[in-house]
Length: 103
Image: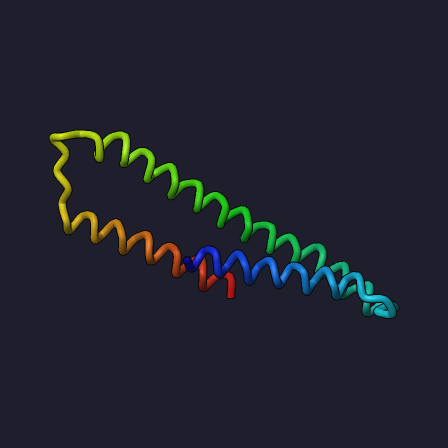
């Protein structure tokens, strides 16, 4: 899924930044500034993206469970195809926004 691809890219980026921070011989005032900036901005931003992705995945799972327990098991449930398509589009749009923000 797109979310898994984003998580993989974010993990790779995090590893690359950590490798830069831990590079031997990368010393001096400029190197210290780059390392500090990477720690305070980039790694914190990555953590935020990971948290957003985790929360999004959890919210989707909760919605699915709620749907299954409240609607799927109800014999009198009426599913409106247009509403389902709209809901799917909303989810797809949200995933695209998450993907765009991680580029």
